[in-house]
Amino acid sequence: MQNTQRAQSGGVLKRILMILAIVVLAALLFGIVSCVAVPVMVQQGVQKQLDSLVTKQATLTSETLMSTLESASEMVTSKMTMMGCVEYDDEGVPVLTKGNFVMIYKATVKAGVNVKEIKTVIDNSERVVYIYVPDAEVLDVKVIPDSVKYYDKSFVLFNGDSMEDSLRAQQQAEEDAKTEALGTGILDAANKQSETLVKGILQGVTEGYEMKFMRTLESINSKAAEIQANQATKDNIQ
Image (cartoon, rainbow, N blue to C red; front, side, top):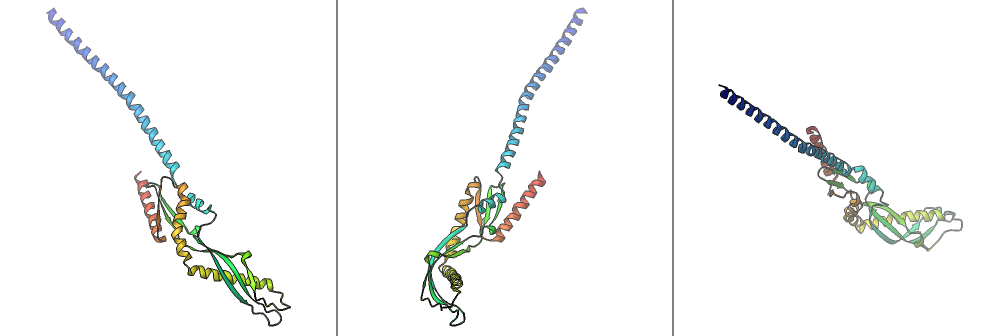
């Protein structure tokens, strides 16, 4: 009888010891897993914050691009020097104020892009900058003062308007130079160079982005609406 009771007590003690061993082992394992899991979770959180910070720092804005473009001294993509002559005959009163002369001149004609009409749209998620560059136009025409020579002067004795006549002749020369330059294809040459010039100016602030040029204003407006819609969808999901 006593032997039976001792055997039963020994069995209970063994079961208790086994249960304690399992509990201790489980506690140790849980502690190890916790020690590993917590640092991993912290690391993932820190990485997520760093990724967010980098994204914010690398985000471009259209204001940045336009400021860079406007800081360029001039958006001239083609320049010509024209030589011509103007036969000037004013409409003054004969004998008293009439002045006639021929003016030989050189003039510079500059063609390029109006910076204010350039439009940019940025897709920061895809790292793409879309750019619309308008058609080139004549930006400036100036007669070179040192090149002007007058011939066949026939100012009458009492003509006091010679300076005014000269200014009018220069204005006429500038109009003629502009017409001549347009006839030689200055705008075609300017259009071919405009994208290259814009790309060169923006290259320093678009690192990591691809630049794509849009041919029409409608196409870039459509792209802007598409990017805005995609961003709104992403914001709603988040």
